[in-house]
Image (spheres, each protein chain N blue to C red):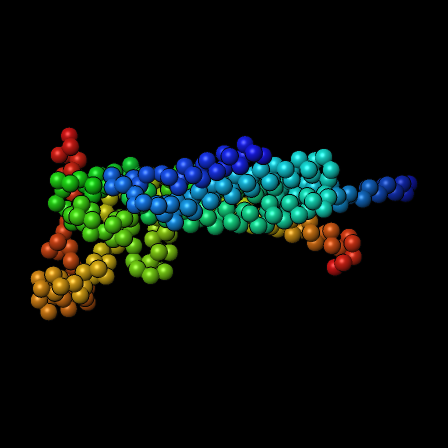
Amino acid sequence: MKAFVAAALFSGAAALTAAPPDLGVPEPHGWIGTTSQWIQGVGIFFALLNLVLLAVIWSSLRRRGLTSVSRALLFGGIMVVPVVVVFLATAHGMQKSMTVEACGACHVMEGHVRDLTNPASDSLAAVHYKNRYILQDQCYTCHSDYGMFGTVGAKMEGVGHVWHNTTGHYAKPIKIAHPYSNTRCLTCHAGAANFLAKHEKDQVLRLMTGKDSCLDCHGPAHKPQETQEAMR
Amino acid sequence: MSSTARPAPPPANPKVGSTVALRLAILSTALAVVLGLTLLIEETPYVFTAFMVLGPLLLAIAFVLLGMVILRELRSREIL
């Protein structure tokens, strides 16, 4: 039991002390990890605890049958702790599925991610990335609509992407499924001083109503082919 | 025509049925937790999709099985 607790604490601590993936900046004094790291650490602890609990119940059922102790353990091991584990794993999975690494996990997206993270690229996505206009989850921020249904829609589309990638049912070069909505750009840019200074009033109105696309002037958003050729 | 009545089969032992159901519930929960643990340790789109589809389903199966055992026990004690 002691070894289990030590292993669980170690795995939790390892998750909490994991270095941020993209920054060389030292953590501030008293840093105790992000919410996401805590969710991961506590989730691993509860998952291991649950597996031990289930093993104890299994063995107890075989040796002594259904006793009052095993009944209490069954309730905890099947109805309480797994709910905590599933909740924490879902929260962790949701958070991690928004990262650039998750989007770049499919081979077909490697060119886009390479262009995004290429400091020499002048594509719209790369400019946003290298200047840290968007701090994290850059793919997700620009490719999901805002609000609850935007998140749900993005997750449903993500399941479709996994399916297409697994079955290989997609045409190359890959293209965005729907015309890119100006709302995604304007959620940050509309009302910004430099946006208002650089765009005429009627131009702003056309962008707001979707008659013009931001990408007409500021595109292309990605240059996966050019980055790939430059790296050869 | 001989009327040789077949002997009635022995009544099923409810305790055996309950034990099997509980074992299935434990296995189902363990599988859901292992999926969750895999996702917590190393998140990939495939693991995440598998967990989101199978995790709650396996847990629901475990809940139903445990609920069935609880109901059966309450009925056998004539509480319900």
